Image (spheres, one colour):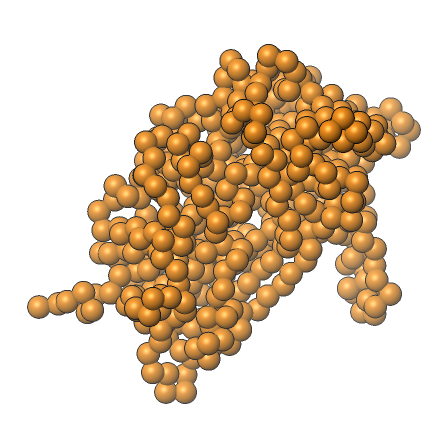
Length: 499
């Protein structure tokens, strides 16, 4: 009679968005799935209780702003419909393309517009709904308060190691048919692989150069302001500011400040944060008297997140998987600047790709890992590269004298040139041209690759007249009015002087 040891479970490390989605989809391929989560989340009857009570040491972005892009919603529709239905039952709002259009831009309906729908949701609400759906799924065991020490392996006989289970910090070992690392950007996978004699993953890193400050609020009437769209965001060069609508009348304001700008370090103080954000005309109406209140009252903190890097790790090379029966997804594999809002979407996309890989290659984890790596590179790598290029442009990096390869130098110059053209041509054109706006929204929502912006001659030609207007000084007015750094900092200084 078969025993549990004969049919070990699939083991998922990490019970966040990537891990929970992977666990739910792994039930299509394994009779048992075990999720190991370091944090302990007490049962919560509703998302608000989860937001208030869950302490997510392993997820520093838990109470920061999140974007749940249209690509994520399409994956939910196709693979996790019960999660989307639960979110809808909670009142999570869905923003269609027409609601996001700039004032004065009229969008004639086109095929595919129904795909461009964002979800307005807090991270806590999304994770709570996903967790509840996974807990209700037969065959899934969710263990929380569990810490992983490393991987166990079977004899190699000179070949690359093969993972056979997970070692916990208490010394016990959980056998596993496959181990899925969904522990996020703090993943210790390189250390685990080194300890069992596996080759190191190929890794690329690039600094974002930013700190992020976030505070949450609740609208008094639980509905957005009149005359506003679902997108309120501005990149003024010296600072980034955005409003993220959430569920149940909530929203957050996030400020992205350059690491090198010490003048913005005081934004962790709520009074200074409030004074600063109200310097921006696009933001101030959201914090006008009677419109909104900090979600937990005056003591609602301003959370800060730093030490952020764009990082890409690959666990497959020309010979195949670096270690058999081990797969990494989500931020453990592709992590980019949170300002682009792609983390949750990339995690859900990779969970779906893992499901597809196992379906295409039943019983062949080596082929499944190779398929996942290949498709992740095709689907996600272009957006990761775009994030790195965007950060380089924002940081004002120029070709280094150390770049001696002429082709590398030309590539960097081309990147700089397109960054300029996007800022002064394409982006302003999206405020008046429905074709460019629609294309930008499809790319922003990860429905089309970012390279379309510089490979589609029709888009480039449509942007040229607006570029000429901008260069003449009569370009379309920005949706997020420009505020001088000195004016905003003076408010910050006055708030500090009153303390």
